[in-house]
Length: 249
Ligand code: ADP
Ligand code: MG
Ligand code: MG
Image (cartoon, rainbow, N blue to C red; front, side, top):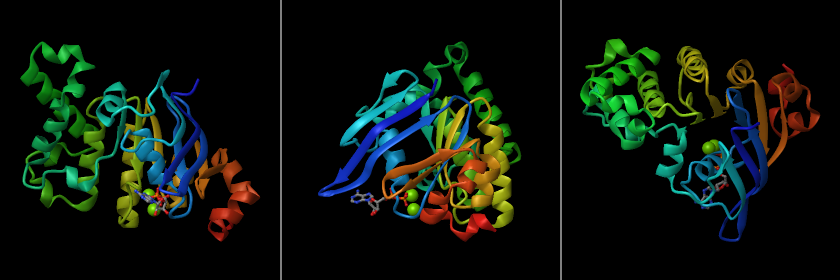
């Protein structure tokens, strides 16, 4: 059974329907990429799922519960987390302080009652464990604003993991990175998504094909295909609508 199901999801801004009946199933523990041309509606889908926007119609079922229309904090508390924007890092706080703030958010604790036994120690331990997971343990005392771009992304990913979510949504986490940084971050995402479900928007098709169990292609507000990387690569409709020669190569 799917951990996240979108059924007939629609979203209009004024007269314009941007999301035009999206159906998508995210399976537990799968890495699933949402790809498509610029303006297709990928980020809007993320805003709808994470509760930042209200759908005009349709259903969003997460872990057996209808979440459409619920506020972002509640959806987050249920176990669905999306990457923070860069502005959610406090640039003058240290890496450790930034991450500890994410860990200390109430929803980060209430799903782990053992942390209440000894709050300070457990918050610190949890923060340290997250830093290790994203390979930033050596940078704990660095000022966040002075991290490299990919290190800032690693910190954001760690913040996304703070409440141990079942589902993570990452919107173009490699945007603006060098090839080397992209490869590094792809490896990190592979590691931290183990045991969870990942829905990722990414334009680098090499990364998408290497990372994904399945791929859905969003074009003009509709999912035109879902399948394994091999199926997507071989799909003529997908090639025509989006991938073109990039994949044929
Ligand atoms: P993608 O992430 O696939 O590049 P977006 O979801 O950001 O696409 O945007 C899809 C379309 O919706 C774009 O044409 C964009 O201009 C439009 N759009 C996004 N947000 C709004 C909004 N708040 N009001 C009006 N139009 C919007
Ligand atoms: Mg875009
Ligand atoms: Mg986008």
